[in-house]
Length: 193
Image (cartoon, rainbow, N blue to C red; front, side):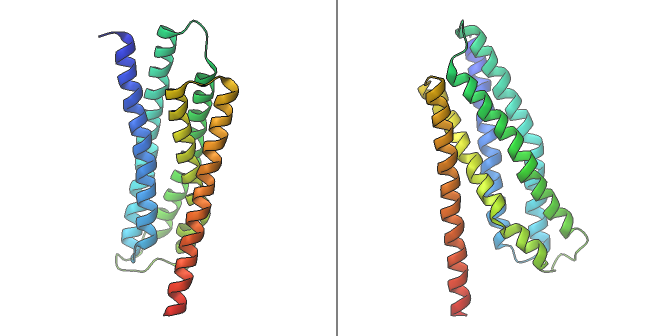
């Protein structure tokens, strides 16, 4: 076993952790939107905030340290795709805790002290349904897929930049399309009632 294979294992393990955080944030947000009680909404929000605040930094650190180790062992100069991959991971590490974890924490805090069977107050329900978190999650997911594409295809610097831009825009577009569908479906259900 070489330093490279150990670093590769840790790199992939860290990437799995980041994907887990994003996946859990999706599940939490969808579950919060479907929840009927403040207690269930608060539980999902608290758990998502904690998972994001705990797992993301550890996973990101694993990815970066292992990535730098593989870079040092395998390359004499720094390829463009590694630079853009690093920038992509820094953006994910900055956006996810600042937007997603902070919003999850705020939602949980707003529901603290309510009885378990209480309904979610309208103001908090609006925060849960606000498109910003959904769009942010989709942008981060797109960026994350773009970074994985860089790691596997290894394009030059310009190709890497274009890849991350396209992946992020596609993530945002998917978020916008799916957010609009949910809004239309809710409106249709309300009209039928």
